[in-house]
Length: 111
Length: 113
Image (cartoon, rainbow over all chains, first blue to last red; front, top):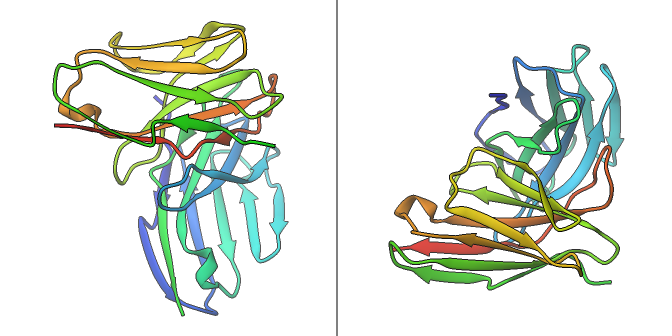
């Protein structure tokens, strides 16, 4: 069974602060995705990374895939209240059709 | 362009009952996946349907079954409901294979009393 562990589980910060959330596994993933989910809604895809060491930027969000493709991080610069939500990482192994999700990081950005 | 739509949005059942949840995929998508999300957890894969057949299944008992129709819409059926089946059930649609970009619906919140 492949597991993805996310840390921290909860994070509450002030507007303007920077933060990093982590997604770790003992398994190798062929691709890894990050989603954001708001209350009462389904997850929305933010980014997909597929190459070890890959870095992708989406405005104030920076995503990195570990060299060994077992871990990933999400860094947010100058967080805003609109960034509040549940951040989920999800990995896919080989030819598997399913995504394995982490348990998420609940981020709250206070104005 | 309508996204993924799920119905109903909320449902309350009692133990032992049966439930059917419905999903219409995003226009142009032919693959539907179902996930169960318990409170405070990430979604867990139930199964995926393509060309009206179950392509892959997660670690869920046979009480969970599904169907895909020729128009690509899908149903999730759960028999003999247990209290532990209370969760948000999410449908996700995609097209083709490879690095699939999943689009999720808003889910059906099922409460089993």
